[in-house]
Image (cartoon, rainbow, N blue to C red; front, side, top):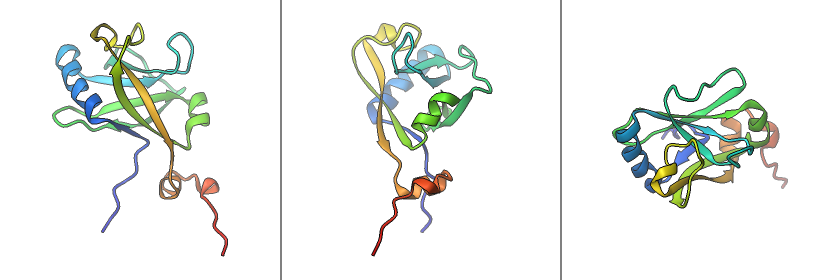
Amino acid sequence: MTRPTPSRVDVTPEAATFLVDLTAQHGPLMFHQSGGCCDGSSPMCYPVGFFRVGAVDVHLGDLLVDGLDPIEVYMSRSQFEYWKYTHLTIDVVPGRGAGFSVESPEGKRFLIRSRMLDDDELRAFGLDEAVTRTTS
């Protein structure tokens, strides 16, 4: 049995449902993981084309939500250097979102839940130097 290709990003069921609603209102969406300036370190959700990504951004992967086109997730290259060993899950909770993120007026906000990549994921992403070494 083949193991699915690892991803650096995922979405909770609650956030996926909310993204379906937001897509109905705003059209196709994308995320950029904020670097901690004005909007803290919140994942920022924008209509596709509203936020320009460039050579300084890393495409972390796509969120796969039933009924929607893949939702691309980006992060700045400099921030990625700190987070490259981490898997990110986008979740949604009650509260005020960041000013420019589409969920802001909805009384909810996106947030990141994170965990360290496991050894198989580290290998898949070419981060072999970080694989846990066991001795017998």
